[in-house]
Image (cartoon, rainbow, N blue to C red; front, side):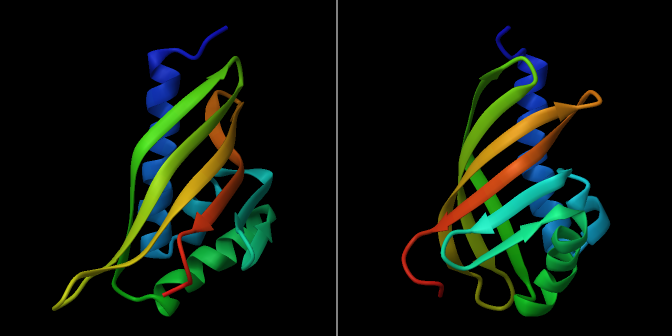
Length: 132
């Protein structure tokens, strides 16, 4: 069964919620976007598996890059039933007196429906060029 418009909107909202939770350092809400054994990977850099590691990464994030915001766009979702894939582009912007693009990249996601809610099973980020 193809994804409904409501499913596609819920999956796109998952990508937006990810940005808001990690930028605020809300580890619990961030980790809840993933399945209990969910994985977040930045290719050739780091991997976090499971809600405890995911939460710790989110809590630490604002301390490492204070004043930054994740922006995702060109979100593309396809799938059926209770599984889907999502791709989107990342622009990470530093805020403050002189806002500037700090990093760009591409997310590739595997999402699944768990108890009626869409969750990341795996989120993989490939950064463009060197980490700035």
